[in-house]
Length: 474
Image (cartoon, rainbow, N blue to C red; front, side, top):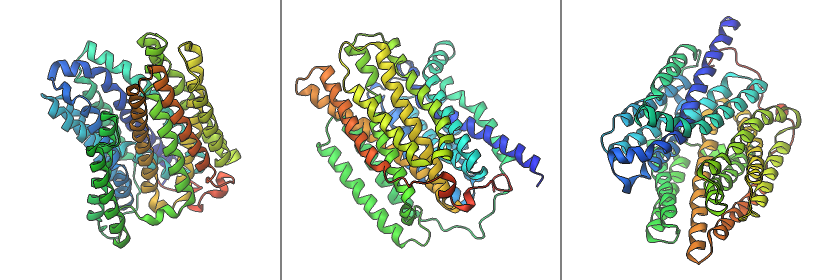
């Protein structure tokens, strides 16, 4: 293949992946501003939270499955199925006539969304050599950050000036463009020599176990208790299903999640560090606007603006950290990021009623810097350390555990706040407990970052993952 044609194909694929990641990221925040109008139109206030929980559940559960299927069947067909599922869910959500329909259609949308981030990062990891891959993964993280930041105002504008249904319909034209680009530009993939044998018992036990655990997290957050019969029952059932999954995978001829993958020290370090960082940050982030608005008396607009520096810090340092790992290696960058995150929580734990807006923005900026130095370098590290044949699964596994970590963090910290309020503590002290909990989790992340292998990124990469492939998609 002519290298100029090959490069043009890669660029078209990159545009498609950026579009898909933008849609997946903005969908997580754009719906929130439309929901009061949705409730006024459809009713169903008592199941309001399931519009979000159902989407998150199906998105998270399917992440590793999309990655594994792409390893077995190829990136292009699996990514196109994922995009089509996401767009079908978007179209159906926009036509929903009841809240129950909207919840079901959002779950369909979540099924597809599970593929967009994981397979997008996987495709970029496969199409480009280490140096370009590092730079581009930083840019993709920036796309995610910008989309998350502009989601709420976009949702408000669409709801006020068109209809809440356009919050979902807006995905369709962009998604169709992404599908066309992937279908025409992502070529040259080797076809499997035989039809893969799918480990359906592994798929069933994995999805059941993870779904039960995610439901337990949601229930614990709703009840502000981890000791209720409902939560404990869901956790116990989830543990049984996951134990069955581990037993099935050990005997399966072609396991859906080969447990031997976790023999990689780099993968284990990435899973632990990213999960703990997400648990601390996303758990606490849900309560930062509450503190600024309810404790300091700031307006809703000003309390929302506090989070802008967090996103900007994440975006800027994601791009910079991708370059830094090529100069100083993964461990130094990741440990610096976790240290910044820990420092931010030390500052958050000192917040009181006299907190000023500038001080709050400074403290969350430091957290954004920390996340930018942790998340992208560990993604690049894992993609460079695993065989190309396991790239989809490895990428999706670290995304999956990061998503679960964030869900655990929100549930645990919500419980901490509720229990302190029930004990008679004022809101400021209850939220102080949330931030101290985050600080403790950061200590765990700092310890796990020591597991990241030392050395130059180029030296730690597998030979097959250093240079660029000769074909788009291959």
